[in-house]
Length: 247
Image (tube, rainbow, N blue to C red; front, side):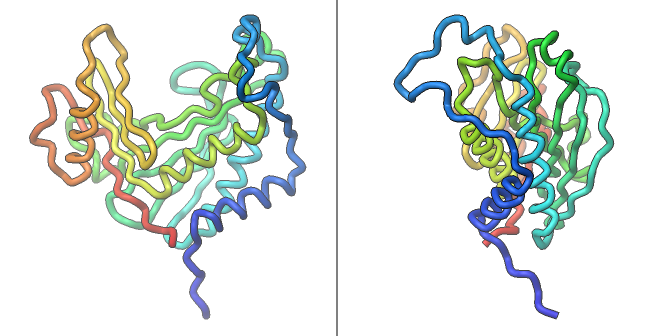
């Protein structure tokens, strides 16, 4: 029996686009040209929250495509309330890679009835999260999932770039995890995240942030198994190596 061939990034994207298009999803153009600035009132307005449900269609396409990739296993998760409040999770998947020390990916679709969206001034969205395998979580860390991306990060009219831009944002984030690496550090006052295409440090308090270069260096050292230089209070939440499932 012939073995399935190893796909490329382009192969995955082509399949995702084809499956997505078969559902005849809603689409809309960018509301303004690249050079035009949004009007002030657009920052506090969401004209059509429901159209962001196109992200659910895209997430479903990704779940189907990743399930066919050799070395990956996709399983649906039970819907439920969001851990951090906000819109509930209405559909979700967990993606595991057979390679050791890879991060586990969660695709979480958040949505609610139209009346709730209007009342809360929110849009349907997708959260992409990762967590370490149980055996890879240091004893000093909680083992909780780490959010890698929120798509859209803002659903107001001013930030709307059209449906194509929205879907491409989700595609990029999924591929970042699939291609790896993904490293996340936790500290009581800050967190750091490094993926294939982004590096960042954020704060949850008024405490000063570490230098960007230091945080990135700690992440890269953690990926190599070196945590000697981590500052006091910092833990390695995820240190996922590349999945290596694409050609």
